[in-house]
Image (tube, rainbow, N blue to C red; front, side, top):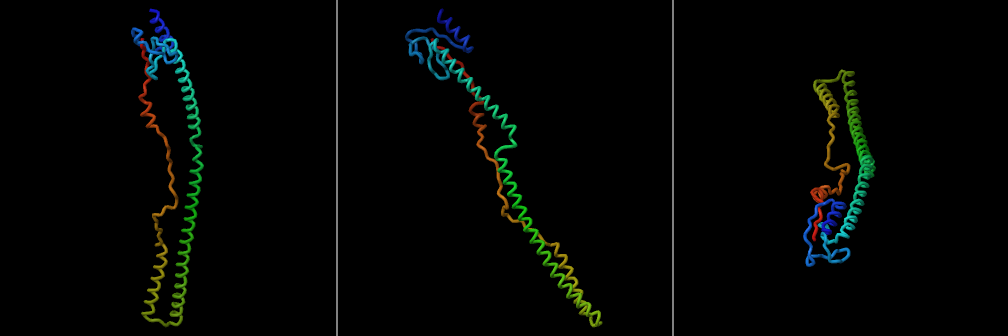
Length: 215
């Protein structure tokens, strides 16, 4: 009766868990892992070790202290998490992204300026050539009219030259830009080592279990 009272006292006051008492016999007594004495023991279902009623309380207190420490550490993680949430836009890699952006834009700007210069040079060269041909044709027309010295073939020749010059001017709008498959900038992407799925699989269905009593 005294043994049953001690078990009820310790477990209802300190553990608040369900236990199962069995009638103790000397043949069934196990040695307490703490004191080494063969006594009625309680087996912790977590560590599978046997404790006498005097030392199971100490084991429970030790577990409580460990759990309290873990709770404090979880709270610290929560604090760090909240700080990181506030600083998400100031992540240390943001500077690297900004540098990549600047370098990429600079490469594009330099290439665009180069293409502009090439296009401008091509257009100006074509205009200079058309202007030269136009001056020659205009001079020839002036001579024909001034000397009144021209025939049908001369007029036809001047008309053909005129159409050619008009075509050359029209061709200035036919410049095209060709897109090549060569990448001008290097693409970047974010990779991480987050193992949230592993956490979920490991801890999501974790259950805390009660201890059993062996008498």
